[in-house]
Image (cartoon, rainbow, N blue to C red; front, side, top):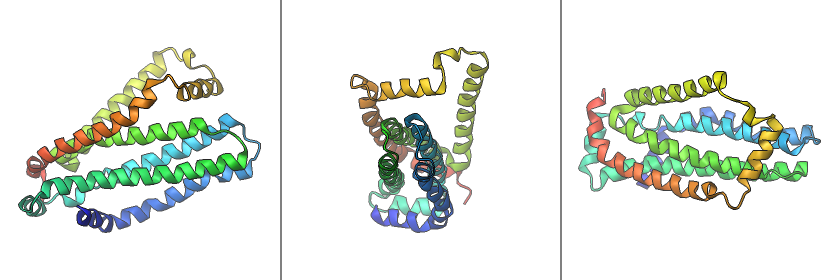
Length: 237
């Protein structure tokens, strides 16, 4: 599996290098505002850090969605299937790559958040808690979409994913136009409510999310192993 993992790193080296400037810019964005504007309030700093983490996680997600496309060849699938435990190693390397990369980015951001808090002298608990939720959400999204991409190929799988995203966006737009937005109050009030919720020790949601994310990720891996050979019928090469 580690040989396949190394192959993925080499194969996608150019893509990794192409998104590195985005990472560097927003990594810097987590610290630079605290130096340039030392009088940032706590909620303003939390907002800046959360914005950076959202952009970085979205960029990472876009990269991870393309990991399967390079291996969508009938000859490669036949070769992998002929090796001992080949299918499990092939699928496992993709899931391991995504998981390790997401955890690496999370740890880097966590260190930068701590640096920003030390420089600004404020508490960034809410930003750290949101970052953790972004990590779990990232894993859950991968867990949901990977079986579709493996079973129907990247082209058809991405089409299904786009339809689902458009449906979710449509629901949010409809609610934004016709729903009651007064429950959210002001931005500062909403962030205060969010912080109280995220730091509430009685919030079982926060404790269950990591376990649910890793469980979904593992179940998704098992499903993908079952679907891998069937996905070959959608390969163009």
